Image 1 (cartoon, helix red, strand yellow):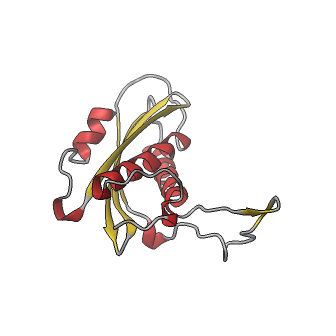
Image 2: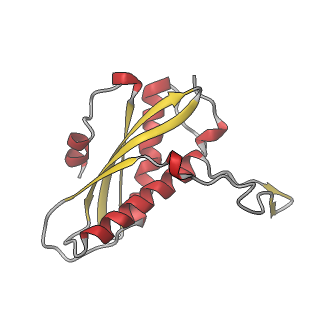
Length: 161
């Protein structure tokens, strides 16, 4: 999956058209996932343009359902990485509803390209394994774009120049 994601995402082409690439990989529930995230910095804020995702989850039974699981995990992960701030005051959450807790919106969701490793091993887990590597991919792309390491999520707490 590492090689497949790197090929899909054109790994090694940093900064073309102000697009920076970051890489993330993860293994859980018997599934290997690798991703390349394309980002730019627009007016000091991170914009995720595209995520390339390679998955080895064993035999895929329902490709449309599998792609939906992967896309949902990636979009949810981007939401956590960019916007998911939850603060507490005296043990109580300060964000009481969606009007005070920013979630990812359709305009923030990137294009997603998914490829599966073809094999005949039994099907494994899907959905959850696709969330963690997108946070790493976005963070690594931010480093390539700015030279700054992401040390705290959500990245919306930081303005990058």
